[in-house]
Image (cartoon, rainbow, N blue to C red; front, side, top):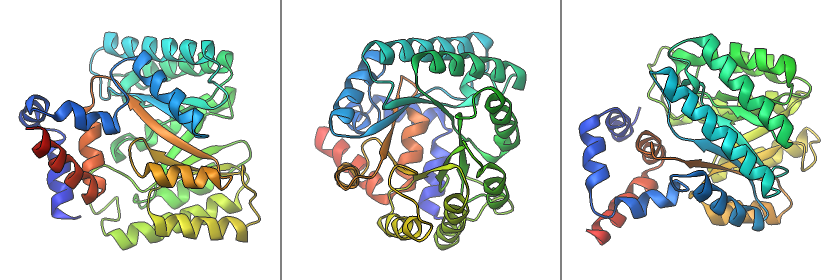
Length: 308
């Protein structure tokens, strides 16, 4: 793994670095590029602008790895409020929710996380939208896939996420590339050991394309999460090769990353969904975004320097 990326990901778990970043003048202005505010109201305001630009959205309330049941309940209540607000504003046809199971209590008890996810999915169904269950680091993969399978017994449309850099992912893709299944394929954003993950960029890219081929050949709905121009070009070619029409798959990108490319793809008739995080617990998310692309880190440092 790139040493700089390793350093940034290590900083994501440091309370001392978190306090330093949070108290540095200008940080708030930089965070706004990648995080849509602290509240449901903030997030919905940003979502309206994206939808007006012809984009779809998936909203993630930040706050993973909760260690108390009351915090898991707070996460559930935030999602319920979010879904009610989206319904009231007529946004549910274009906007869904993304949920991390550790925010719903997975670290405490798998059954608790399942029950809480069930409540969120039931509310999403009532509001006329969908939910995607995010993937976290490799220690939670099996539990996340078990919960996903349970939810899909009731709601086949519940989306799952697979990370191409994990060595196991091709097998997982084969299991999930079935009718009605929605699968977001991303490269992976966590620091993982060599024995479970590809760590060289070229290896990860090759794994991503292998998994993408399996998804396009399957009967499900692939959701390709990448900002890599070369991968986007390859995906477009592979979609044509497999006879996939626009609307039978989608591209996903992060809020604040390559907005011009987001709009370009949408203007060409592609379905483009923007992953929009919100909430006060933005630090770990921001660190993962900086680790993914050196350009993000340079932007962050330049912006801090200009505001200090």
